[in-house]
Length: 198
Image 1 (cartoon, rainbow, N blue to C red):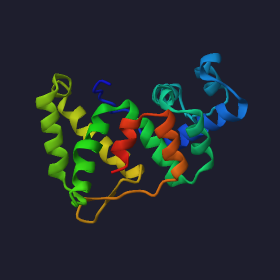
Image 2: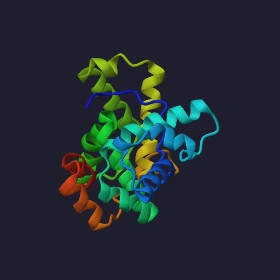
Image 3: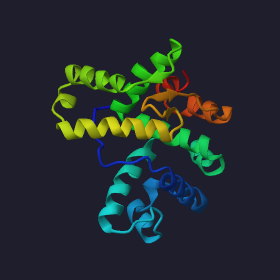
Image 4: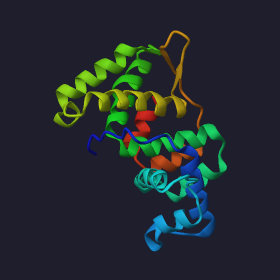
């Protein structure tokens, strides 16, 4: 998994859930259909323009590769907290920069009984990655800033951090249906699951 500056991507939980519902209820397999055309024809991604569709499609098409049939069922039927956990799992499977923050900063702090993230935690992580990776180092300054915002947004929407009044973030641990955890353990990415189950 390479580092990628996904500055144009959003969490897209509703879109992913709608896509899963569409595929599952129609019995479609992505490799057997014109996936892009089907989504466009049926307005599954709820887009206002061609460029908006293109942006959402590229993201959804990438993330859907990490989903199992079992997780597809769960994202459709489970409550929003469980659904967002699955969506964040799909993001972490595809986005190394976000996954490593989750592992090296969030998980590390939690297991050491430190439940607060401050701005310097984000900055220090970025600095470390700049030193570690030429790809990250070569991102534009604005791209780096946007990536830190993406980390905050993704982990907030996924239920793992919550912004406080003083601007810091409290680390939390969502309660997830054991069947989802078992499905990932048996058929999904165990390394990503480990990161999420601190």
